[in-house]
Image (cartoon, rainbow, N blue to C red; front, side, top):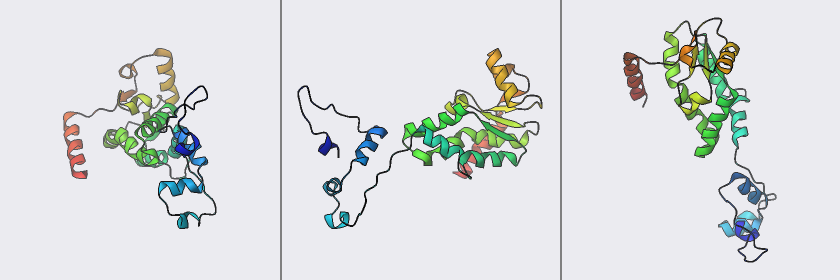
Length: 203
């Protein structure tokens, strides 16, 4: 399609080369595909002649990936919320956290299938320690935790709601260690050894 529509030329009216790895550019080309393009690609004319309509699909962008994480009835975020709810713990994923997961999947080119592995890696240790901490009522996952800058946050005090935690962070600009009723996920040496052993058994 690119060779047909944007043939090489020189001069003031020349068409500049386009970034063919850009999803929007690819989508524009796919929308302009005709049967001859499919034949040039290698499909036999008898096969192409059976297509009454040619329809193109476009790659998922970050907004689409965020919707896949949250909107479906059995979405990935709802599945993890259900798993944490088995221990009477709520999972709160911020908008920036969702966007960061989607950006990582988009950057890897793994699409929707890569969302689960990214989320699993971020929450693996948290799911390991939460059952042994009955005072934890909420797991707080934001962009910093998804990027690996720090671990997810555990809210323990009954008065430490998500809104209260975000208010303290926004107004006080203080570290998590300085906030009473909140802490990051931590594995002591024995827990770390058990966690590593469990990963090896799972592998």
